[in-house]
Image (tube, rainbow, N blue to C red; front, side, top):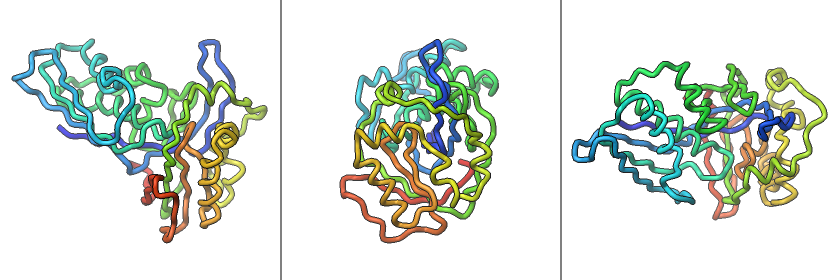
Length: 277
């Protein structure tokens, strides 16, 4: 069985306060985009029961494959039922450490994949806390539609930013920005703007109001990332922002842009803005 874990961008990212548990309360609208990995799982009788043989291809992922969120999701499922012998293959196309949620999406989609493949019938109400245990933004990838994320990112409610008819340009410069470093150097906001309300305004009014609070630190540390945002705006984007803690930057255009050029080592994708995956 094959599934396609998709990426996300953040429409605004407000970091509100640090919590007693060490996390931060945030508010952000997470928006699905048609950039995806491919994840396949099959039951293989030649593999001993309970064993999972996992392979990764595509974009290299740093770290030990044993720590991959796909395998951590397998262990979540193992708590509920005995597993047959499985083979899993993850092909990475979403850049890692890029603010696009690729690893979180892989973990959440592993839960969905095994639920269907093994006919476990885990209800959605149970999948959500399982995903939240994997990571703060993992529950979003169970929803397949824009969501307002609050708490540490796991408290979700539907959001409907209207990007109908618009195009997204996503640029990734390949700069790794550690999320913990960004959180550790943030100036927390002093005002609490209603992000959902801000996103009901015309897209042309978003710039300067729908803000990613992480940009100030990241752009100062890595000016090349801020330069991408400025270039997208200069080329006609109605709105541009960094996604998550970076380093990916996206622009929203009213029509399909042509003639965009960035450094050859940068990744760039152009696709229509769709509210569902």
